[in-house]
Image (tube, rainbow, N blue to C red; front, top):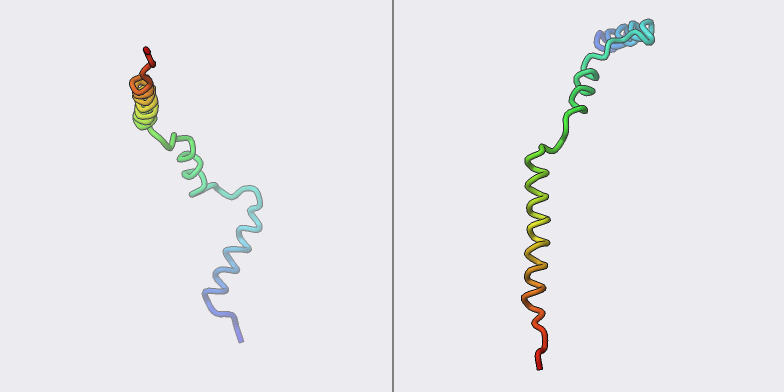
Length: 73
């Protein structure tokens, strides 16, 4: 019984790729490589997080000094 058409087409495609060994174009992989060079987080978002972290630590330090009242007696 002969192989189904889809299986035969897959085998032909596989055999053609075997003959190309090392000369296969990058195709979708080239697009993926270009996307990896872009930063994942924007500079504005990094600046926002820095402001939040530094600002909250500054507020915490101010609050610490306000609550530590020296004993003057």
